[in-house]
Image 1 (cartoon, rainbow, N blue to C red):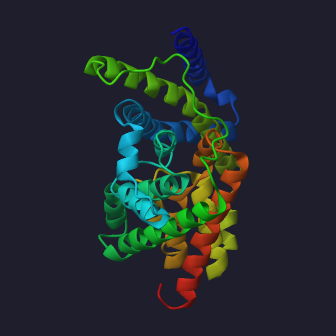
Image 2 (cartoon, rainbow, N blue to C red):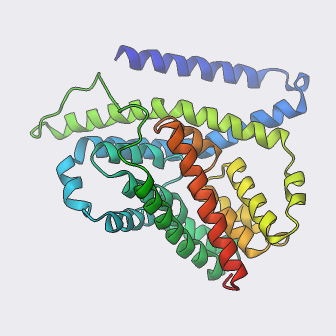
Amino acid sequence: MGQFIYRSTTWSILAILLLLALAMNVSTLHTSILNLNTIFLSILIEALPFVLIGVLIAGFIQIFITEAHIQRWIPKNKALSIIMGCVVGALFPACECGIVPIVRRLMTKGVPLHAAMGFMLTGPLINPIVILSTYMAFGNDLKIAGLRMLLGFCIAVIVALMIGVFFKGTQFKKEPFHPNHTHLTTNASFFAKLLHMLQHAIDEFFDMGKYLIIGAFLAAFVQTYISTKTLVSIGNDLPSSMLVMMGLAYILSLCSEADAFIGASFSAMFPSPAILAFLIFGPMVDLKNTMMLLGVFRLKFVIWLVMLIATVVYGSLLLLAHGGIL
C-alpha cells in the first residue's frame, strides 16, 4: 500500500507540474517545443484508454485464469498453437500499446512465446474494429481492408513461426513479481478476487506506463524535428516508397483503430503495396510499442523481433507486388 501511495503521489506531482507548464505564458516558448508538447499529449491521450483496458484484462487473467486453463486451451503442436494465438488475436479488440501487458500476463500463465507473439501481432492489426475503420477510411472499399486482414494474418503466422524456431523460453528480462500480493485460494470470495484483480491492474499500469511515456515522448520528438516531407520525397519508386511508409508508421506511432485514415491520405502519392506496408507494419510494432516491449522483454529479443517483422512485411509485400498480385 505504501508503494502505491508513493507512486500515486509521484504521478500527481507530475500532473500538477504539467498543468502549471500549460498554464504558463506559452508565447515565451519556442514553436517547436509547443509542437512537441502537443504531439506528446495527443499520443498519450490516444493510448492511455487502451492501456487501461489492457491492464484490466491482464489483471483479470492473473486472478481468474489459471495455468490449468491455459494448458487445456493451448494446443501442444507449435504450429497449431501459433494459429490459435493469431485467430484469438484477430477477434480481440486491442491496441498495440494495450496488448503488451496482456501478452506478458498470458505468458506468465503458461502461454508459449510463439503463440503469444501470434496473438500480439494480430490483435492490434486485424481485429473487427480495425477492419471496419479501414473499410470506412478507403471509401467503403473491401479490397484494402481484406488485403490488410489476409496478408497481416499470414505475416503474423510467419513471424511467430520464426520466433518459435529462433527463441526459447519467455525472453523476459526479469520475471514479473508482485511482492505485495497475497496468494488467493480457490475458495476466495468474488469480491476478494476482484480487489486483487484491481491491485494487479494498478501494478501493471504503473509498470507499463513509464515505458509508454518514454515511447510517446520519443515519437513526439522525432515527429517534431524530422520533416515528414523529407521522408515522403525519398519514396520515388516502389521499394523506397514502402520503406518510407513503414518508417512513417513506426515514427508516427498511431493507434491501429485510426491509422487507416492517415494511410488513406497517402493513397494519391504512393502505390497500394506501400499503403499496405504502412497499415500492416505500424500496428505490429511502432516506437512507443517498442519502448513498452523493452520494459518486458530482453533487448536482444526486441531488436530481433522488430527486424523480423520489418523484413517479413517488406519482403512479402515487395514479392507480391513484383508478382503482379498487388
